[in-house]
Amino acid sequence: MKRQFYYPGRNSAQAEWLVNYANKLALIAPSLSISQTDTTASGDDARWCAYVLGVWIPAMRAFSPSTTDAMDEVLTGTGDTVVTLPTFTAPSLPNGTAPRKPGALTRIFTMVAKIKLDPAYTEMMGQDLGIVGSEDTVEHPLPKFTAEVLQGMGSQVVKLVFFKFTHAGIYIESRRNGGAWEFLGIDTDSPYMDERALLAPGTPELREYRMRFWDKGTPNGDWTDVAKVTVSP
Image 1 (spheres, rainbow, N blue to C red):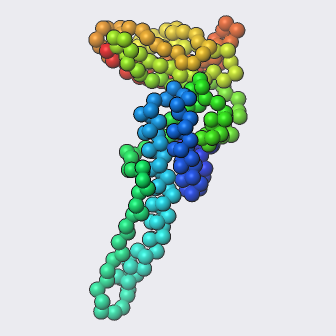
Image 2 (cartoon, rainbow, N blue to C red):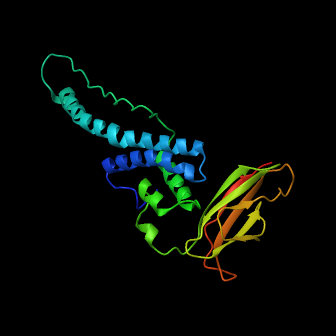
Image 3 (cartoon, rainbow, N blue to C red):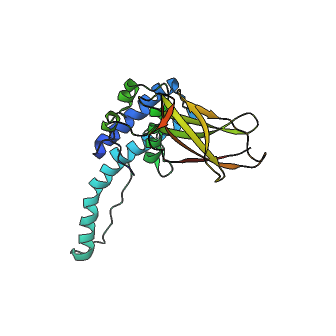
């Protein structure tokens, strides 16, 4: 997993960060174009990770020496009493916290990237959430964007949320089903909506997107990595 500069290094500090993120996300998300479903899911991920890092792991570490003692007693101990092995009982989950599917922290980092690309995102929001790191102060050689499939009229559409940093706009190309790259559009305000009809009506298709900066009427800089989505009827 790529290191995120805003994320603390120690487990205890990570647990605190996660609790703050969950609490502040619920307050900030209504100002952004993030669904209530995604907000709730990301908060649940954060609370689960906070429990594991801040409660469960310390309890396991405190329990661990007793397992070593038990092993020594089994192997080299003395006496006539049958050995009773220690049993670990996990701390109770706090109210509102439940186990989640694997990859909870990865999903949180993905949500943070989405938040930072939202047109309504501000640095003050980032400070509240604790998601402003040293990487936010460096020069950005490429645009950043996400591609999300939404249900449109008649078929699905693709929402491209982008961040142009200090540039005038972004230049977008796309290709479908492995065909040739084609010019899709120039945009100066995120998001860009790809509402093209399917190449074959009723048949799902793979769409790929890439972007570069656009200034003074000319595309410039390197292409971003390619984002891929499948668009269905």
